[in-house]
Length: 138
Image: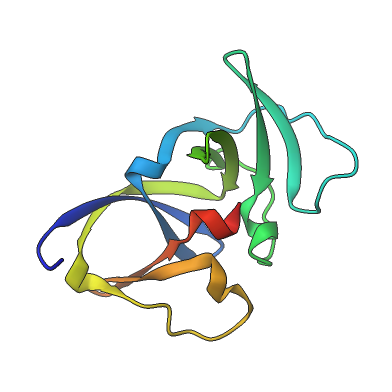
């Protein structure tokens, strides 16, 4: 693996930076009106109309059992596609597109409830990006 660079979308949930591979990310949109749907899981906020497609939207803070922030002008919806289904994920802020190499990726050694949601931890100088395992999040 070594020197092969991968691109990541870096985003914020509370005080922690998370990352998703850029190839799993379709687009990033501003917060928009969400239609609530009854009888869904607690972390499903509802659905949005994305250029004629109905896309379910989850609150990533709720999904990862993190404190939920009020939506503000930094709130974004990251639209991902998994197994042929588009899903929007509400995040507190999208920061940048970052790069990492295999050498900078460590396994998710942190034990705890959310560990199945992580693919690993990217160590970038003094920063840590938690790399999400999209299949398990969705």
